[in-house]
Length: 295
Length: 107
Image (cartoon, rainbow over all chains, first blue to last red; front, side, top):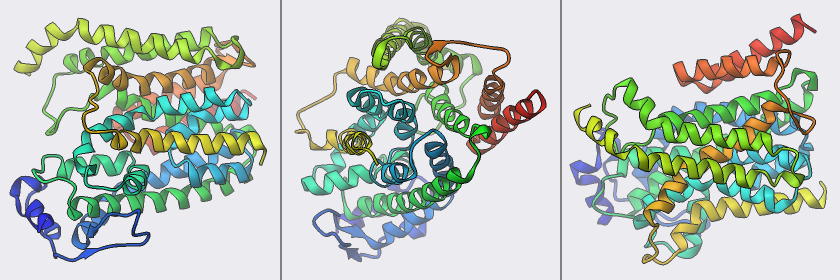
């Protein structure tokens, strides 16, 4: 019943007349039952439809990651293990040079945590959905809930009045299940392929380029609640300024401290960049608020 | 696979769980202060920069930026393509192509 209400509310379907989102009322309990919440069957189908297009991007990203892991110097077996259990592309690529360099594991883990911090923001934005789940369901659902499923979920269910219904989890598991499967297949293909390519091609550069493609949207497109309004270019540059400056500061400090032992320079580098960005974002609050209203 | 890598990868898996599910496991009364939220917003970008910059601008553990490091031209090309078209596949292909052409021509 809750599921029905959640999708009957027109506000829940910002995409407009979407008949596929209409509830069939069929709730499924896939294996493993203690780990997966009840899912609405039609919501799963909606999720599958939503992820179909982005799946192409996941394929490319998985391929690049797989190739880069092996070309970056990781043994094939370790690359496969990493893909299967870590399941966090940008963190995998970010920690790759550290792991290959045999840097201390705490440094590796802290780096991965920092790269993954955006998921804490995602989790904070969706926590009211998760309050009905058991601990094990929260663990598995959160683990599978990556960038794209989150973005698709917020687009479809971000403004719902009801939370955490089988409709919501159906969508989450529809998108996340496909994302997981596509990612794993693409990564394995990439790992096999990467093992066959000659190292002088420097395919590891592709990993750096991929990370840059992850980094740029973080700098240039601060997330707005919804309905991306048209904003003047100068305002976009202005709003990107704190992150842009923070990134430059971090980059400079991390290069300057590269001679420090055990990559310890990462810590002051990131701390300095974040501090500068936070200070700058406070400092520019006045002028942007005025211009944002008129934009 | 060495023990170092196995332990490292298991730890990395835990960081995935902590980042994605950790906040859901906290009691509801735990709220993120505004300053912490801001820091969280900037930290991922800075963490990526801390990995990317040394990869591009250091060689054998010392700072280095050379006109003959063709990776930099590939990186600039990929960045421009991505900023303009927001297409990761195109950006990586163009970046690798620029690098590869320069590498082969000036080898």
